[in-house]
Length: 84
Image (tube, rainbow, N blue to C red; front, side, top):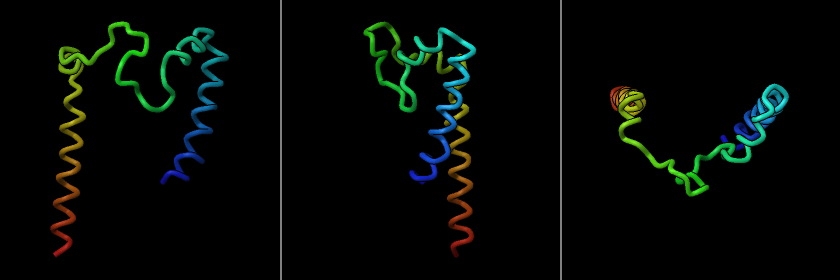
């Protein structure tokens, strides 16, 4: 999986960044502030940027957790049902 990820996604990311740099001059500043793949747990600059439960519920992000749990339940059910 790691080899697949590196061979597919790294060139895609570089191509997207090249496009964004050519169309949006402010992208360079953004790219310097935001990690490429893994999110930071803090804002990195000491500015306010912590997790907000209010925004979490406002944007209904809990739907992702619900969806992941449904998919997991289906896969586990299928595994146990077909495993017998």
